[in-house]
Structure formats: structure tokens, C-alpha cells
Image 1 (cartoon, rainbow, N blue to C red):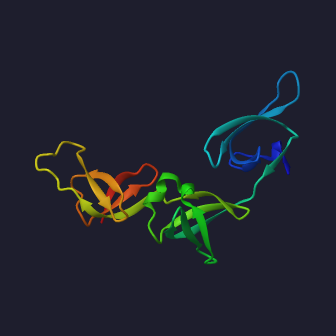
Image 2: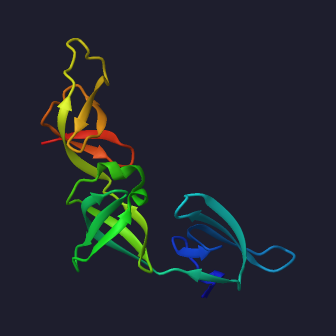
Image 3: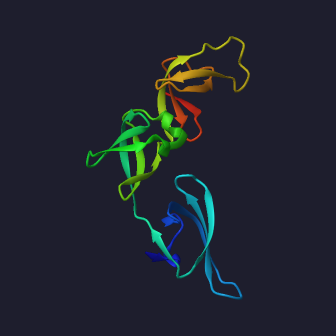
Length: 186
């Protein structure tokens, strides 16, 4: 256990039985009464923002979180199987930890996963992935207005909007945070 004054932005705390990350922590000393901290926390599982008023000597639990690089091996129902790059130990983690970026994962990719006492709490896919186009609609002649796009299907079955010059067999870079086409890869 630690005092509130020892917490810093970015720490992960156990607050009201939930894991939260500290977004903002401000020390206040009003004219009347004792000093206190105003904290803004983001719930790790739900993403909700919680604000709290904590005393300076109030006991809080700062969690020890280990973040490592892992290799994504394969999908197993609602879970992904990952492997530690150092010890080669395998773990099963829920797909939901990756959020919308989960659909862009390809076997063999490196991912970042955070564990708190053997429980996976956060996962992050690479910001950009390179995928091959397996099907692309043909471009219509004369449809050359600026920013014209067409639908294309990637090797893992995702439909994405791409510029007209992208063809079947091309490799493209996709931003996993937004799901948007970035560029064609040579």
C-alpha cells in the first residue's frame, strides 16, 4: 500500500476494486480545511473516466504491471494465443483486449501485452500492418475524381476502402487504430 502523494500519472491503481490508470492527479490546498488530491482515472476494462477526491495520507494500491513483447500465434475462438519472445511460454488472452484492431492481426505479428499478477489487462496491436489484397473491384474508366476509392478484400478477409490504383496482389499498409488505408507497399 502507498499514500496518494506517491502516485504519478500513468500508474495503474486498484480503485474501488477496479483497475484504473491515472490520467491526471492535482494537489489542492484550499484556504480552509486540509490538503487533498483531485484524481482523474480511466477504467482499464470499460474505458470510463472516473474523478475522485483523495486525502493526502489515504492508502492506495499501486499495481505492478509487466508489459512485454509477444508474438501472436493463432486465434482460438474468442481468444488469441500469444507466445513470449524470450521464454517461449504461451498464453491465451481474450480478443476484446485488442479492441477493433484485433481483426487486423496476422499470424507471426509482434504485439504488446500487459499483465497484472498473471492476468492480462491490456493489449496493443502494431499501429500499422501490411496486408496483401486478395480481391479488388475493377476501377471504372472515367471515375478519376480526386479521392475516388473502391472496396478491396485483404488476405485475412477484411473489406477496406482503397484508392483506384490498388489492384489484386498489391501489399498495402493499414492503420490499425482507424482501419484506414495508408499507402501501397513495394
